[in-house]
Structures are given as C-alpha cells and as structure tokens.
Length: 219
Image 1 (tube, rainbow, N blue to C red):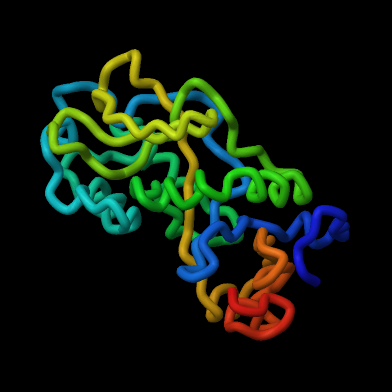
Image 2: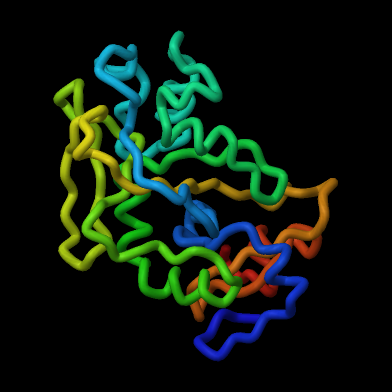
C-alpha cells in the first residue's frame, strides 16, 4: 500500500510500527518517539567525552559515532553522563538494540524530509519531529573539542555547534536506525511507514518489504 495523505492504517499496523523511513536509499528510519526532556550532550566538562572523542567525528555515520561514545571509560549506563547516548542505548522499540544518535548529515536528510515524515508519524500515532527553537543534537563533534553539531527544525535550517555540557545547550534527542531485509526474522511482524508515494509504502519484514519488493518498492 503506497503512502498517501489519505492512507488509513489498521490498529495492528499502528501498534507494530517502530520507525518512519526518511532515507530510502540507505534504509534509515527515525524513531516514532523521542526523549521527553531536553538535555546536554554530556553531563559536565570533567568527562572524557567533553574532550575530542576519537571515532565520533563522522558527519555521515552516526552509528560509529555512538559506538565511540559507548566505548568511553566513563560511559556508565544509568549515570546519565552522556544523556543522548544513554537514551539511545536504552531505546529498544521493535526489539532492536542498535538505535543510535544520528550524525549531522543524517539529521540533515531527516530535516529535508521533515514535513512528510511528520505526516507519516502522525498516521501511526508517534511524536512529531518538532519545529522548536531548540535544535536536535547530532552525534558529530565539532572541530572545537568541547562542542558538537546540532540542527534546527524550525524552518531556518540552521546548523550550529553547541558546548557539549553548558546548561544553555539543553537540546532535543531523537534516535534513528538502519534497517535491512533480514530484520525481525524471529520477531513479530514490524511495520515501517516510508513517506514517499513513488517508492515507499507500508511493508513488513515477513513479506520481504525491505528488499525492494511490493509493497515497499525500492525501500
């Protein structure tokens, strides 16, 4: 069933949904929900991650950036030393444990498709990617070791580097995940909403929906 503005989903599809595919070529989906409060990138300027973190500078690979933070000596799940990354670590929608904080360019792709992504999220009852004066954190560090990049979604399309630990740098958090046709082979059917009328729709892993066959087409 291709995505359209008048698309109607069953309650079962809504209950099984875990993501909206915002990058069809790379099969990347944004989580349907986000951390409720705004937060800093790291808890304080005494942490290892306040300095430059090796392996967490990619503008395209948020998964690698996130893993680099997990490998820090003072990343202690439950301590909230690195709030965005602890949120990602604990986010298990769909039974997946590999959600991550997107890199700057991944966030940019999401921002470019935000209007239709939000339309799709609304159809499954998720939390919209908000247009807010506070941007979303990326997992990409700036050239300034004490800062990381964040992107606004309020129509200004501003990308700014913020101090990782300053109180004024309490920003929004949203996870993403890269999907494949092998996902959920042993789990309940999981649905993804792909916001593209030409090459997207409603699909599920048990009907090969992410492998280029109907109803996901090229997703």
